Image 1 (cartoon, rainbow, N blue to C red):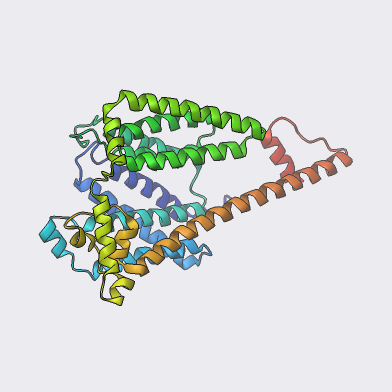
Image 2 (cartoon, rainbow, N blue to C red):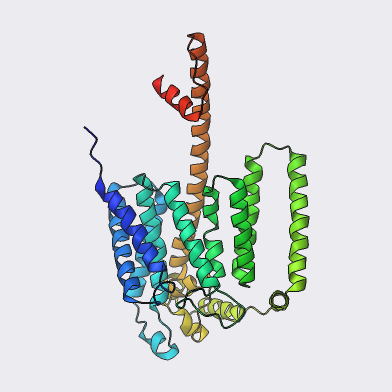
Length: 378
């Protein structure tokens, strides 16, 4: 008799993936904010809340998850107890935007954590999601759909899509294909003329190269030579692109001259508002959700830290910082555990291989699956 399969994780997996795709197909196969998008988002968030409840009841030892839940609950509480009507009436800003984004991101984190604990996150599924978002990015970037956003200037916000999904390329088995995807994403991100996307791209490329060098068996001199040669080539290509593209030249000139689209002014406004506060309570717990536009006269600063400092004070900053520290600690722990498992498997394999020889047992040499089957039989 076959073992009983828990159907709940399977339902969660396919429901979340389908609703996620339906939601992001708005602006591609149907208009933005259409009823399909709202219905899909409602189901997706409902499934995510269910996963959050399951995780909390399971009493996981992953502290990062508790910090994520605490940060999400704090944001929802601040939003629920803050009167945002002033912002929407005076500055014609939708205060629901930030809370929607925050809820979506952290619910997605909890949902995927639940699926990973249930062994429902396989490489094939993640690569399907990567391909889906890459195609969505192409369609929106070139406005290939009648529902895609029409870009009235040279700056294209769709460039962020390609840098946001860059970590997925580590799942691609062939290094040549992952390199091609990285190059294609880089071209699109640079063409978007979004300075934030370019900064993320440079940081990721450095990380990507470091990972490749770490896994490589080449000598230090060979690695240094390859990096130096690649740096020279990339620098020459960058200079060529800069010299032949007036839009990029203008963008670089604006950045070097201190033109940050008013961000420097907004940053100063938010910092001065917090430091000059006459209330210790407001410095500790902020002024309330979506208070940022009240300080910057109707604009969001596009700086999570300063906006959190204004809206939620040191309390919000502390939770957010704990989340990043927890994420780094979890990543380091996973890498350490992975290395220990590899060493343990190698020792087990070597010892068993020696015992097999001493006992006159020939180990299968056809392929890796035969090796694994042989080890399991021992």
